[in-house]
Every structure is written in C-alpha cells, then in structure tokens.
Image (cartoon, rainbow, N blue to C red):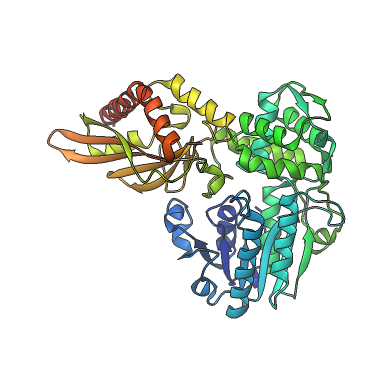
Length: 492
C-alpha cells in the first residue's frame, strides 16, 4: 500500500480498539510498518496470537465498557473501531455508553486525538437505526475536550468484509433476483485499501484536526449497478433484477441471511440502511489527502483475487459478537444441567499428526461423516437466522482462538492438547465440541466430547430429539480425524 503521510510524523503511540476485527486487524500492521508504537485493546488477547504482527505490538486486556486507565496510559492517538450492532435489543444505547466511557478515559489520559470510523448518511434525512447510531457515536466522541475525527464511509469493498460477502454471495448464487426498491439507492463504495490510507493519514496528521470527514471511492453507483459490476469483473453472466415494492427489510434480511454468510440478525440493521443514500457530499478528504483512489471495478478485482487464493487477513466475523451466538428463547428455570456425548479412539499416530488432522475439520474439508446431516443442520440454521455452514476458514490447516469454523467458533486451544469449539448456531441452549489428546503407549488417545447446556424443557427435548443423529455423525467424525492423522504421519 502506498503511504500518504510523511515519515516525519512517525513514532506516535496509537491505541487501536477492535484489533481482532475486520478493519482493526488490517490497520494495526499498517501503523506498525509506518513506525508507530501500537497498543491493542482486546477482551481476549489469545485472539491475536495468530496475527503475524503480534510480537510487534503491546496488548492490553480490557473491556471497552470498563476501566480503560491502563489502555489509555501514554497514548497519543486513540482509534475507535468497535461496534455493538445487534448486541441485544438496546444495542444503540450500549454503543452510546461505550463511546462515553471511551471519550472520558481519553480525556483523563490526555490523549491528543480520537479517530473514529463511522458511516455515511445525510443527517437531514430519516436515517436507519444503524446509521443514526453510527452518527450518534461520533457526536458523543466529539463532545469532550479531546479533538475527534469521524471518518464516514459507505460500502467497504474488500475480501472478507460484510458488505463484500453479501455482494459476492447474492450475485454469484442468484442469476435472477427479486429485489426491493433499495437496489436503486445510490452509494459510493470504497476500497478497504483506501479506508486504511485515510485512517493512517488522519492518525499521522500533524496539525489540529477534528470534525466529520466523508470518504468514498471515485465511483457513485446504485446497488443494482454494484452487483452488475461484481458480475462483470467475476466473469458471471448478466444478473437480472426484478424490483418489487412489497419486499420488507425484515424479509430482505432473512433472505440475505439464508443466501449469504451474514446472519439475519446482523443483516437486518444493514439492510435497513440500504434505503439511505450514502454518497460523499463534502470533498475535503480529497483535498487534504490527495492520493489516487481505487476505482470500484479494481477494488472488486482485488477482493475477488484475495478471496480466490485464501489470502484474507481479516474477516467481518473474526470479532466475537452476540449476533453469532445462540438465542435465549427458552426460560432458564430448569437449571444448569449439561448433557454429553463422549467418543474415544486410539489413534495410531503421534500427537503432532493428530493435532494437525484435528485442526483441519470443517470448511471445505467437511466433518468426515454424515455430510448431508451437517449440511441439513447448516441449512436449518440459516433459515432461522444463524450463520450456517457458509463461513469460510482463513487457513485450511491452522486454527486460532476466536476464529470461526462453520457454525462454531474456537473458544480454547492448546496445541497438541485440546481444542474447544463453541456453537454459534441457533439453539435452545449452549453447545460445545471438545477434543482432548492424551499420549498413549501406542499412539494418541483422542477423546471427543459434545456438551450441551439446555435452556428449559425445550432444550432437553431438542437434545434427545437429535441424539439418534449423534450416533450417525460423531463416531464417524472422531474416526475420520484419526484416519487423517495416520495418513498425515505416514506421508510425512
């Protein structure tokens, strides 16, 4: 990426929140490369263990809604990239409280500037909840004594972004689409490369700087034209759109949740925002930071290329969020019973080969046994608003804490000892899939445990209802891992 700012402004102490998320995980290495000292604020530092830049940054463990004294100590520039979209019914109020806490902590620490990435949208119009909250957060951050810069962007085009994944799946899966009227809404997409350029430039700007700065790519298009551009660059046949006036945002979000990796719970506020034109009206960014912006077709080409090769540094679902978790639809009066399905196998291979085989589960490799059952469960999950099996793995043979694996997320990991996946499918309870490796006299003992904590009576009915299918799936899963481990060791 070409640099915008002068190297004379290097050496700032920068705090990045949301470093395990889509934008933050790409911004950090840019700042490090520019010579800045970077501190990452995360709730679980293990999520950064797999990042290639981990050893080059300072990491502080904290909840952004809690005490930020340690995180803010000695910081020059604080970058606010967190988002609580979909985090319960009062997520808008939660975003405001978090912004107030961040602002106050920055004031007490004597931070020079807050940099925030928000969303485009005309405040004189009726904005969606999502965009209204984005703007409200910007106003809260700017209401203190610390100068605050709010960059506002629209659709971010980049491999792994929520916007790009929605665009990619809708366009590739559906040659003919019945669409709502929002396909005619105008937007100004921006390449992830340009978003990072602007963020770094604002961080490094040496003169006083505050207020709203609107950023966008060089092309203004409708969402229909955006999909047509994707189809053309991807070499697809022409996509036909049939707009209808009766497709509500709720139905649209359910459809998006079914067809794309973005669950309906997250898609709903995003789809609601599509009725608002998101176009740059103030062009000061282009005057202040006059670099050549990436055209839309080129941005799409970059994103498709990285997606095809699997070179995706971050994805929109990297950061843990309640939108991926199970819904609490049942009463909690029944207590904390945990139901289990335990399988064990002696693997004729060492712990290292067994671990490598274990880390290959899911994604394009599948789950070894009862593949149609896994696909059926994934389809059902998408119908009810869960992530399903569409989420792709970043690396086919490695895992890290916090990484999604189909409708699971890695909760705990100790190499060659244990792996714990937490279910993010929609369930009447909470579920985990856990493996433990134990050194045996002739190989490795692999213990696989499916754990389920039901909510109320329906949770128990669900567990015993699917128990017969466990007998078709789980034995084959643990045997498949064992067989794969043996094959890996023999081929080594």
